[in-house]
Image 1 (tube, rainbow, N blue to C red):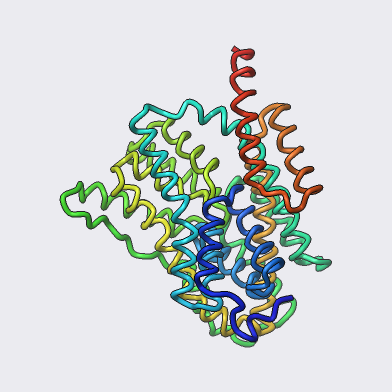
Image 2: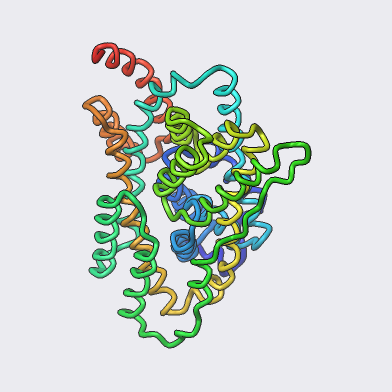
Length: 394
């Protein structure tokens, strides 16, 4: 267990920024895998962050709307370097994948679609399931222990996530409340600042680029701010939300373009919701990409840094610790359930099932095997297998 919290940071802000840049550049597997990487690298290997700080950050990220991995990264930057650290860590984490999806958006717009994407995603999607499954297993074994109530919360959220294919925010809060009432009977019921923030919507920020289509940029900014303000946890909920607005509501993209956008998010590193940059680019070019990304990530930034001081100040109290542990159990349950949901979409035949299984076995046997190596290999396998299977099926 690290003691950096008691004696000051054992790293510089520049080192944290470089780590977040690297994670944003090569961190594949979606939010479940990314939060697992942060724990492995920053808590276990480097000792920059304590286990307690990590758990508080995971619980806060799960409580608040917005992309889970990005919020956790922002919180971990806040731990020792406060607002500046949160800002630097968040930007460093999001920037690489944003630049990648903008580049892919440019290529998509100029060269007519991404026909090769299906073949790559055929392999990568299956490998991602294996990566997420291993991350969920590690999180489960590290956070639940033998507490029967926490296991009950975990199983409830896993089943609900699988059954509804979405994340129900109030159940996370309920998990924290139940554990709080069990472990530490309430003595400060009037302290409701954190819960009040859960239902607060960040203001919309329309585009301010002169000489451009400001009404369109305003619509983009408003829509994606809503997406960032109401999507919880692993990012599963953002896909139907985006589809309803982007395809059905505003008719900015057609069905094929939207599916390609989701595929881009899955095969690029960093947070899955960075697909908003790709969508924004297709709708209104570079300005659209910037406004969409700003609209999505600004609420999650505010929802992290505003309550963070309260978590730091009151996080060691028994009542708060019990609440955090309950929410953490709920978060890990939802994450585990999301493995099944994602597997339904990505494991579609015996080759993809084999890729997912081999991924799990490789990560189990070779603990230090870099995940990007598996992702690249799976993509190459997809490029080879998918056309053969597709032609055979045809």
